[in-house]
Length: 313
Image 1: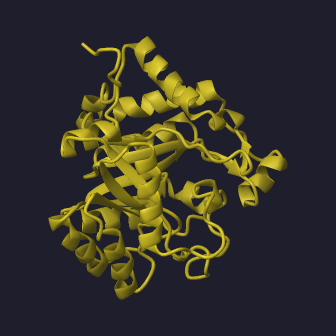
Image 2: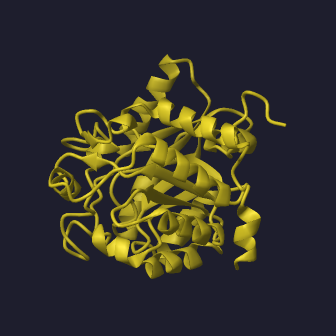
Image 3: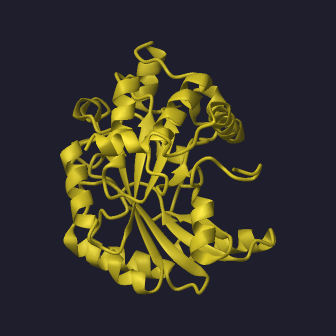
C-alpha cells in the first residue's frame, strides 16, 4: 500500500536516489550546437514548435565554456546547501551534431568534476552513429550515461506535419544501435500534437512500452512565441488540450508503460515571456498535483495496463 509520500509512478528522483544513495541534481549546459533541421541538412526552420529559449531561457548571446557553466551551477546549489551529486545535461539543440573530436572536448569538460556522477545528452535519432555511441559508452566506466532521443510521436504523418525531419524508422534504427551499449535511453514525447486523437497518443505509449528503453519525458503541446505553431494557433488552425484533458490522457499513457520505466518528466514550464498557450502550463506543480490526484481517484498507477500491452506483442 502506498504511503502519502509515494508517487504512483517511478520518478527520476526516486531512480537516482536508488542508484546513488543520495539526492542527485541536474545541471543543464549548452554547447554551440545546431540542428540538421535548422541548417538545411534535412530542413530549415526547425520543428513547428521549436523555440529553444522555452527550455533554456538563459541561452542568449555568446556561450560560456562548459566548465564555467558547471562551476556556476555548482555554486548555485552550494548556496542553497544542496551539495550532493550531479548530472550534467547537454540540453539545447542537437548535442551529437558535431565532429567526434568536438563532442569529445565538450563531454570531457563536463566529466572533470568529482561530484558529477552522470552525463545526459539530448539529441535526434537521425544524429547518431556507432562512433558517437562508442564515445558515450567509453564514459560509463566513470559515470552513468543517458542519451535522450526526441521522438514526439510514432506516427509518420505527425512527424511530417510538425516538420521533424525524420521518420519513426530513424528512431527504431537509433534504438537498435543504442540498446546493446551500456547507455540508458530516454525518449521525449508530446501529448496533444495536431491531428492526433486519444488512440494515436496511446498507440505511441503501447509501441514504446515494447521497446528497450529506460526512461521517458512527456509534456503537453505548448505554443511558444516566434514559431510556426504560434501562427497556426493565432489563425485558429489548432486546438490545445485543457488541463483536465491532458491529465486524463497522461494517466492513461502512464498505465500502459512498464512499471520500471523511469518517468523523467510529465509536464514542462516555459517562461511566461515565451509561452503563448496553454496558460495552465505556467504552474508546473498544479499539473503534477492534478496527475497525482487523478491516479489516486482511479486507484491506478504506472504499469496497471502493461500486461495488456505485453499480450499484444
